[in-house]
Length: 179
Image (cartoon, rainbow, N blue to C red; front, side, top):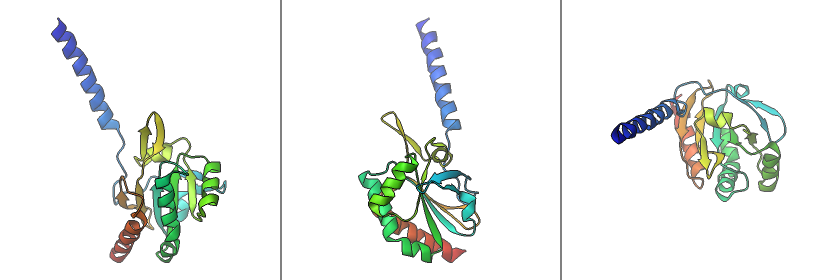
């Protein structure tokens, strides 16, 4: 009798785990349309991804304003902003922090690109860029290059902040050569 109970419990746990695996989101595929969204920027203005059609978009997700890795990553994007502008690319940073947090972060670090407040984590989830950290939801450190037609051109999953901007610029140059 114990074996039957054990097998029943095991089968139930296995089925639940299998269902979780099957319904868990995956990052948007290269060549597919980028999931559309509308979020508020640090300026308190609504930003819609479709507003950037015709431009390259560097959409980067990061865990938290004012943390060391996120600050390094943001400052490096800011340092290289002229190179992104030359490549006709815009940078959009996304985390689950509030508009006010983004506003303070931009002011403190001198950031001149848009940070978007995904406070309900729906956009992070759409891009499979949501993680659980000690019971708290945070955006995962992933970046997507979106081409001027609105399609995912390249995905960087689990990036390291220090050299990431240079990595994105190199990928952007390669992608633009092939277009």
